[in-house]
Length: 91
Image (cartoon, rainbow, N blue to C red; front, side, top):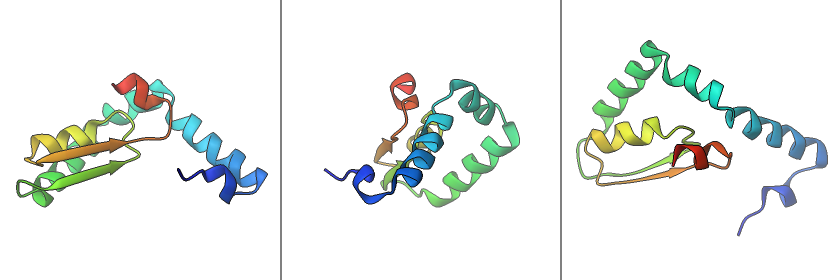
């Protein structure tokens, strides 16, 4: 298994850790999901890209919204991956 901790200096690791902790905050996830123009733009782009039957990987899925949009657009299989703790809340 790959460990990001082995590839980074202590300062870099703290910055990466801060990044993932920030996106783990449910308030930030709620804010992004409730941004209707942003969500609509993502939905339109996904609908245009997914023709049906694709396998999609949503890296950094957060709330899982984009993964759900891909499934709704016709993706055959969707993998939603996230390193932050928000993934547990999104389950």
